[in-house]
Amino acid sequence: MNRRAMIIHSLDNVANLIGPGARGDVVQCITEGQSETESIALGEDIPANQKFARVDIKAGDPITKYGLNIGRASCDICKGQHVHIHNIESNRGRGDLNQ
Amino acid sequence: MRDFFFGYPRPDGQVGIRNHVLLLSGTLYANPTCERVVGMVQNTIPIVHPLGRCQIAPDLARTFKTLVGHGLNPNAGAVIVVDHFKEQGCTADDIAHEVSQSGKPVAVVNIRHEGGALAALEKALRLAVDFNRQINTQQREKTPLAKLIYGFNCGTSDVTSGLAHNRCVGWVCDRVIEAGGRALGAETTEMMGGEELIKARAKTPAVADKLLGFIDRMEKSIMACGVDLRGSQPTGDNIAGGLSTIEEKSLGAMQKWGTKPIVGAVEYAEPIGPEPGLWLMDTPGHGGESITGIAAAGSQVMSFSTGGGHTINHPLMITMRLTGNRESWERMKDTMEVDVSDMFEGASLDEAGERLFDEVIDLCDGKMTKAEALREFNAFAINRCGPSV
Image 1 (cartoon, rainbow over the protein chains, first blue to last red):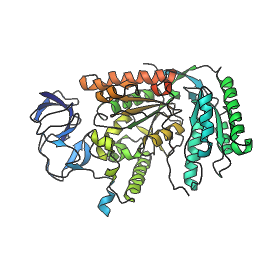
Image 2 (cartoon, chains in turn yellow, red):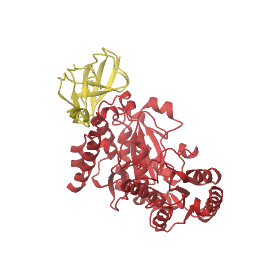
Image 3 (cartoon, each protein chain N blue to C red):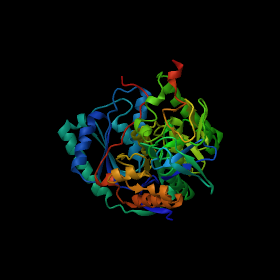
Image 4 (tube, helix red, strand yellow):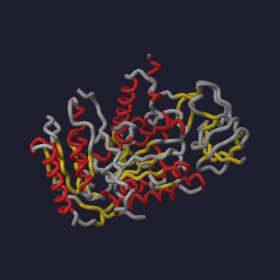
């Protein structure tokens, strides 16, 4: 199926699906204010409107959305894979790391 | 686009968009008297809560400030403060004294002094009837948007929040500010991760420092609990909606701030200054506590933007709900006012933003929200800064 996604800022390494996506779907990614789109094939099923990797991301790498840091990868993430709490984590409010 | 609304001018210069008689409870033990009056007399609104007793001084001062702020909110045309006896530092007389500075009709009902529940109820009922007859000949007058404090907040956010409805709120903030008005946001928890944006947006370094101080204080209070914030923020519904970290939630939430400079920052429930522009208040992410702080600062109308849908409705500050999530709209349309989900099908920000703006102005002119028509009062909650003792 032909799917669409939004890249909010050109520096972002994640994109947001519009609607749900299935493994193998080729997604046309639109960047705000740019006319060119980029095509990314989804590596797995992704729930409606959620994030996927725009590029290969290594464990520990920063995750960028809105052009800013929203956390770090907790494992390697391949381009087109679902990005959520199973593979990224926050850097803030981590009282657990002080224990 | 309209740069005025029709409101009720108050003697202190504020302008209300409703003309209610407020039943303001000083303590949890006076709540039933307020609720009974609201059940019996039309055009009355209850402010009831579990506080006002056995709070340490700074916490009680916060309760006092919040209650006084609601008495002063221009959507109240007259105020009846109900108390059961006397709490040092937060008596009904103290609250009424502060509220009476506004020049609007204010009265006190003290359950003990009146001779118990029945006599107190009789007095409060008579006051509510008389105050209604006293204020209901007041007419709406054409008022510049400069008199508006446009409150905004978000909750049950999901990944559509930062892409659609929060941006519409920011668009309306910009228009209100361009017309000389003030916009007031909050939610310190959802500023965590947005520090660079705050530094870039603050009008002065002092404003940025104050906001960064709020964030630091909030983060330290979380760290002091020795837990991972992730157990609480993002919330379970945020995560189900695709938000992975507090930073992602924050940057989406901050889309509500529009594009104008942040001109000032205030503590919880404090009045904001007269300068037109974007103002921010130190509140938690908790929706009820956050919008209650905003109402205490005098905001007349609130846009609450939500991904998953929300029932939130402040009793006194007119609260409209919007979403850009089509499924949430379909499930919750009896509970929400504006749908901007067509932004995912090509509707522009200008188009969707104007739809929200028009609804906000209509509400200012007197159009009811769905919750108002249903007389739902669910979001008065005072933030605390100390334990009960």
